[in-house]
Image (cartoon, rainbow, N blue to C red; front, side):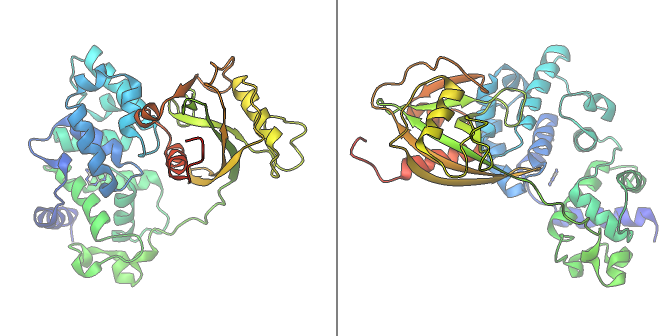
Length: 374
Ligand code: ADE
C-alpha cells in the first residue's frame, strides 16, 4: 500500500463523512479558520460552536476585532479557558490590521511570526485557508498516525516528518481535516471504531489487535494541589468587590472575587495574609486588608461553599466566604496583586469577564438563601 493510496482512501471517506461545522463554510474565510483553530485548542468541538457563532456575530471581520477593547474580547471568551489565546488573537488582529492592511500571512513562517500562532495553527491556516502543502499535528492526528504506523512512543519530530510525507500534492487542507475528523469520530482514544475506518487495511495497530494501546501513555505525574480563600465582599448598596488580575499572568485581565493562597496549617503566623486551614474570622479581615487596604470586621462571615478548578499544571480548591458591609464600600486605598479593584453592581458583574470559577462563585452567591438584608 503506497502513501498516495492512504491519502486517496482518506479523502474519499472525508467527502462522505466530513462534519458540517460553522467554520467550514465555503468559501473559507482565513479569519474564521484561524479563530476556529485557536478556539479548538484544548477544547471540544461541541463547546466551541456557540462561542464561534457569538464571536463572529460580534466581530465579523478582523477589523472589528482589532477595534474592540480587550475587556470585551475577554468577555466573549469567558468560560473557554486558556485566556492567553484570546489576548493573542486580539494582539495579532491589531498587527494584521495596522501593519498588513488586514491580510493574514499565507505561509507557515509568516503565520508563526504572529502572537500565539505555533506550528500547528500555522499549518492549519496555511493548508485550510490558502491551500498550502503544510502538515498539522494535534492530539487527533498524533493518535491516528501512531496507530497506522504502529508507533508506541513516537517523538514529535518523527510525527511531523510523517505528517508532511503523507500530504497529497493537491488538497492538503482537506487531507489535514480528514485526519482530524478520523481521530475525532472513528480513531478515538479508548474505543476506536475500526470497523468503520477507511484505513483499517493499512493500520499496523489494528493488525496487532490492540489499536487503543497506541500511542502508549507516559505515566501520569501527580498534579499539585493548591488551596485558596476567597471573599465575596458585598457592600450595603449590594455591590461586590472585584479585582482585575494582572494582564500578563495566568487568567490575565479577568476579574475575580478577592482571593489569596491558603497557607498550610501553622504557617499563618508567618504569613498573616494567608488564612490557615482552620479559618478564624480575623484571617478574613487580614486577607481583605492585605489585598485592598480596607479595614473590615469579618465576624459575621458566612461560608458560601467550595469551588474546584483543574488547570493544566495544578488543581485549585477555593473556599468561599461571604462578608457583608452595612455601608456603601469605600474606594480601596490599595490594590495588592490586582491591576484594579472596583465595587461592581450585579449588572456589572454580569457584564465583566470573570474567570470560570468566579462565575460559579457569583452563581452560588445569587442562589443562596436570601437573608433579612437582601
Ligand atoms: N480540531 C482542530 N481543528 C479542527 C478542524 N478544523 N475541524 C475539526 N476539528 C478540529
